[in-house]
Amino acid sequence: MAKSAFLSSGFLTIAFVSLLIVFIIHVTGFTLPIWTTVNLNVMISEYSLQSEYHIGLWQDSFCIHVYGKLACSTVPKHESTGIIKAVQILETFALTGLLVSVVLSFILIFIRQTGTLKLLNIAFVCSSGIFIIIGVIVYGLFCNGDTEETMSYVTSVLNTLNVSSNSMKLGTSFILSTIAGSLCLFLCTFLFIIEFRRNEVEAA
Image (cartoon, rainbow, N blue to C red; front, side, top):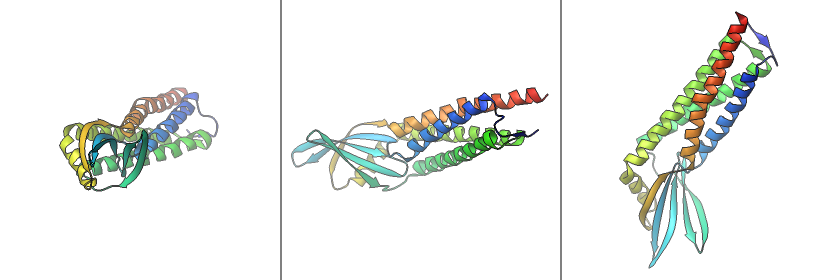
């Protein structure tokens, strides 16, 4: 049974706000080039400078500490491995699903409510969360399991510099995407399901 605008429950409104927060967090993690941070020593003449190389899904960035200041510049993606391409696809699917879900949620709150739209929305929210989680798991395994390959990639990009690695860690973008995926799958999906079942009980 269809309902008109502004008859949505509190659960639907809360779910929509939560979804918007997830969307913003995921877009930030998706675009920032800080999925992996590699701490480096750069040898220039007899001087050793501390620097950081940040690996992103779409571009990288290189930062170097000079006289107590951090100077950074973006670096075009030198090469995308099979793992990176897989994560790009998964996270893009997730972003698309979140965008569709935001539109559907807006329709459900302000225009029209039907059981079909609600089920479709739940499917998009759940699948988006799954795509994000799979993407960060795959990337996490790549980062921790293929350290030599990652360092080889960095040195190939900075081939004109004498660099050595100090340490490597998962970066801010990875953490943000993990948070977005968890919230999407376990909070937003739960809220949308609760709201759907609540309306089904009321209709019965």
